[in-house]
Length: 290
Image (cartoon, rainbow, N blue to C red):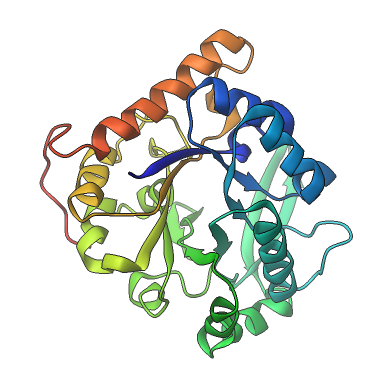
């Protein structure tokens, strides 16, 4: 049976311990641990204690997508350190992002921020790209039982146009890799129906980040946008998908001010996933080719 888990990033404004507690109360099978600059996201002894105290296992680990203190600064080093953490806490999957092609320049004026995403990337990003494509990732994968899944990333908007600021972030390029994480809200930013990827990517899909997209805001609760999440999950079940489905929301779309409502909303998202992962559940829709 597919496990439905909650990304701790969905509740990062509340802290790691409360994310574990709330995931358990809402009936999730586990959590995906988002590693960031807070020490409690990357101390194995403490994290194992959280699992014992809450009964909520860490199913997957998300490698940090920013520089974190006392960790390697380069991307390959961060992935390897995150893999060590995943092994230490018993996670089955490590999620990593594709490399950046550009860095951002933010200009502030008149109370607004304008982001120009066209500066050269940090020097480690081309190195990371070569490592992914030239056998470094495959060699690391052979050394561990943790599945290392590479995630598709969103389109950025600049002057009303979609911009791809990431390398290796088209479906033909991602298909060069053996293990992928499909993020549904990121698909939505490109106007792509994730259901159309199930047959195209096949067994390469080993991990899923699930949330909705409303045309402006990413990582919305299910039903708050226009992504065909029901059909996507139906097709995964029909194709005997064996990975996890991680509900990955933004806390700013959740009723964090009311704990009862928050638990109910988290539970609603989990129950939606389980219902759609059951054969024959949910309405059928036409699949849009991508």
